[in-house]
Length: 352
Image 1 (cartoon, helix red, strand yellow):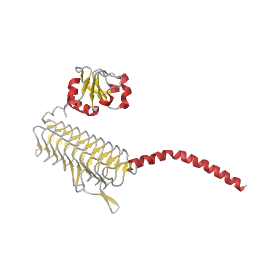
Image 2: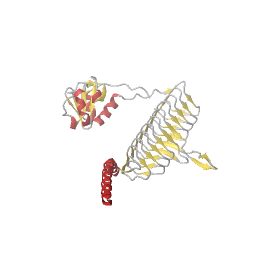
Image 3: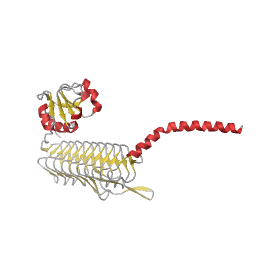
Image 4: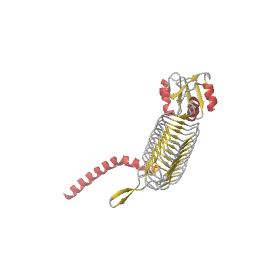
């Protein structure tokens, strides 16, 4: 929740931290990591993919962080850190350079904390935040400005709620959960029954559990269970603008990319990956390790480890073959029209 101060590093320090080696002057310092095409004179330029090799020619970076297979490419900074995997090395270096300071403990004077709530003395509660009756905020957690933590909500240790997060009653957050601005956790699911021609709301009385080490992007909505619990498994990462329906179970260490929608009671196994804007109907079972492509429409169960795409979602390779055939369709129709004209002409000659 607090601001992050950048720390300058030398190439020698960076190489030691990442298990890499230095080509050139190990004393060179950098204070930022940037893409090759956008790097300035104080920056360590990143080259992890051969597709961006042409950008080396105009690179203005002070030094280059480069994957070993690309280390001999011409152009760009002469001073280099060569590592097995530049993306992984970048994560290590960014963590060192931008280490987050712990939140300043205490409750802001403009916050409202119910007398029956329990806020750990090492936790932080920002201006305008509201903590309800019986709620608990664990050690080292930070509740940002204008957040609402409902009655009886439990927030574990080391969590970060960015501004304007709302956690409804009946929700539990584990340890080290990160929730970005504007997200709503534990909202009512979409459930109605038709009674005498009117849509009557089914009371949504279940809970919502966010397990340890989950990160949830901005403006997501996660429904509470109708009578059971919605659950986001440990280590899962949700991008911005994701909607999770009531009673959905997302298995541990799953990845859910932006604008995905999962309808009620669908269950995802461990390590599932959902591409952006994928949509899943309700009451499905998605096996562990399944990979669902962007904008896929999933209307049936997916086996463990299967890769699917398209609408309706099907085996990824089969979908690609189908799309390739579809792109050839205009040519096929053109040939068919030529054949029809020729046959029509031959038929007219036969009639004469």
